[in-house]
Length: 402
Image (cartoon, rainbow, N blue to C red; front, side, top):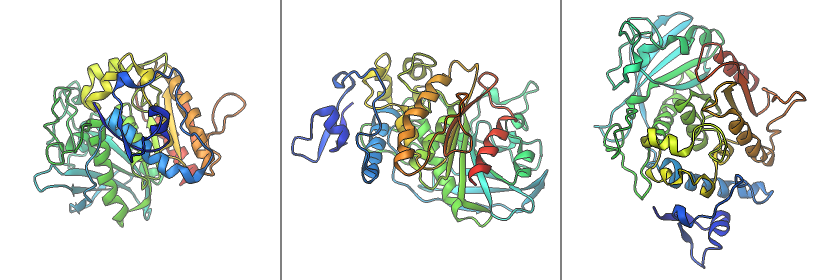
């Protein structure tokens, strides 16, 4: 896979210069140098350089990891009537359309706290449909593709994921919850090697780095932001992306790509999320691209067993969120997501927050991080899961900044 890399500090570092031209080819994996330690995000201490460097990092991530995305097609949202009364607040469903007329719309479920004007928003993908977050029979059931694991023991999907999203508590804390079924944008289907379903055929990406499912989901998150930032129902300047596991990867990727997102809270996001690819623990590039090849651009699999040849690492993606607040959360016993690799990634990205005038990560005397700082990492007991109590951590962090 060969592409183009803008002439800049990384082109000089990787290719020895730009040869008098404006661009150089992205080298294939076997021509990239092996760098055992994660490469530094910054090569200089100038904040004036960051905008160009950030753009160059985005190009690298697009080409080698996630794939590119099409030009933004601003979305339009149509609010359904009536607004329903639910426990702790109200619910409205919004049809968000973007791209060609034949493109599948996003059905955005918006839970609004009672008595709060223009509340901040926690924006999250859901796996099984908006109806899976509540037992309320009035919320329409999603018609998009859903995995068999979405059903509970009785075969019912309504309310089956409610334990992961304590809606009433989120509303009680004064936050709106905006959520949509990931399959509205792209089904999580590993057999879709040719990117033929979901939004892919309607918005093709030019070039040699086809966008994967993670990039498609992040694009969908930005289309939800299009609606939220223009809506009078919420405060579009206070949007936090939240997600667990693969959806944690998306919460981070969407915030990195979209500066309108005010905060990112990736939870147990693992490889392809916060965690370094150059790490001795957790899921390897070989494992994740074997089981989930559709998440990434196809060329990412070429780094299986060759992680040291990556011209960047996940702390580059983390750094793209700076200087906005970011909290990464891991489970103490979640070895597959590799908490030490996530912590190291946060530590390596911290210099960008400091460069941009933020105090960044603040490590306390006991080895933990200050969870009111702009950049933080923490753990909680347990393995790989999201539970209602995790939201108290998320909301406390949001309270400190919103």
